[in-house]
Image 1 (tube, rainbow, N blue to C red):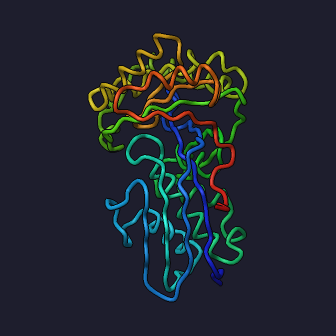
Image 2 (cartoon, one colour):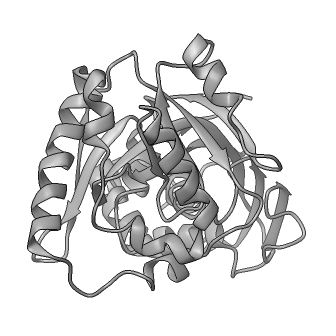
Length: 304
């Protein structure tokens, strides 16, 4: 196995999972990207971070991108003598926009590209499976890798799968990002071990409708984003976020908790529209708001 000379660069999008009823199965890539560069060196490990995580995340083998790269090199059969990694992070951490999945996808993607013929040794299906195993579930890593709107899951044998779906060009999003993070583990810890059969059945119907709504019937998004499985149970960890979801939905806006929260995502008709402008104006004091298009590419070489 031979490593390539010179750096490789990747950009990886933010993602929003669940999208209301699609708990642990539906995810959407958004036009907000972390950018990373890596190269093989003669020895040692150098990690540089700017943006989110700067001065906070470890700059050694514990760094999540490095851990993902090491796992990929192990899968390919050889570790390099040294590594240099540079990360420019714009995806907020611990806000429900897939920052950890972006890091994992960046790591597996970079490691594969640093190996000559890496795409022949590890195709996209294998790369997705590795990323999902590192993350523990595929709903964020799948759109981060593939782009667009993706349905994903895990088979009985433990293997992960993903099916990209089309997204209507009229669909965009506004995300409202609070200043206070919520750890995914804490948000998951609030979920019950079992839910009423009626709630599960209702969510199944809404999740199916959501696939249709995003692919060509955006007028159905309000009804399609209703959830009974997870959002209300998480209210103690993010009461302001749930209050915003309720206020938006009360005005006919299809709004949901993004991933494990606390970010709120509201579907709209794309950046620059009057509807989007009115939604941006509803950002709570102290929060950040971004109008984002759907990212249709996923992880890709970064030319900047």
